Amino acid sequence: MDVYLVPVSADRYELYCEEPEHEEEPGAEPPTGFFRRLMHRFRQMLADAERERRQGRALDAGPSPANGFMSRMKRRTMRWVAESIAQQRLLWHLRGQTEVCYFYPDDIDEAQATSVLRAQLGHEFGRHRFWLAIDSVGFVASGLVMLVPGPNVLAYYFGFRMVGHYLSLRGAKHGLSTVAWRNEQSAPLSVLRRAIGLAPGMRARHVNDVALQLRLEHLASFFERTAIPG
Image: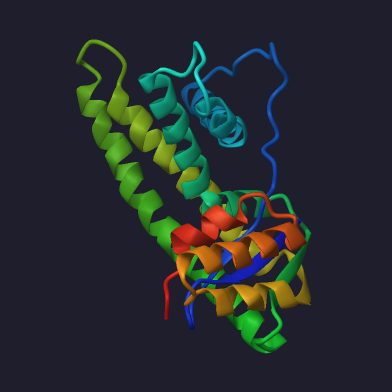
């Protein structure tokens, strides 16, 4: 697994990776039990979002039977879901790793890059622990509406959030305590820092060049969402 330290302002960074989701075998029996079903649906939602991110833009172009307004909105929403959870996805993947290659800009030294990595993981551990506690309370409280006919939407909402925060918390802890990090300098990542203050058109060209060099399909959209001129 490769993790990249992406500069998004003069002195701020975000961790980034691109790892494919492992989809379940078609025709597999859905699990039993509320929490196992919830995890199953959570993974299905992520797989659907990833497919929309990869295929949706092509479907959006030109007329087709599946290109009505509601279909386009659904595809765009699912792509937004896939892109907006990029950092959580990184933490989820960390849970199963023993060694990770960590690329950082070559205009900072290894000690600073390591410090930023551990600070980010520590911050994410605390943040997801806090929200896991909050959503657990919400999940328990959602039981009060179980007497209302129909599906308990609140329970599924808080349940989904609980799953995401729980996986993120475990990933951050695993990254801090277990993963062996192999550090590598990366000149293209330093180009991203210099591109932050450029005009949008020129910045896009620089970022797309870096994405091609690093073979990161979605880096450009991630950078545009997170970078702040500084």
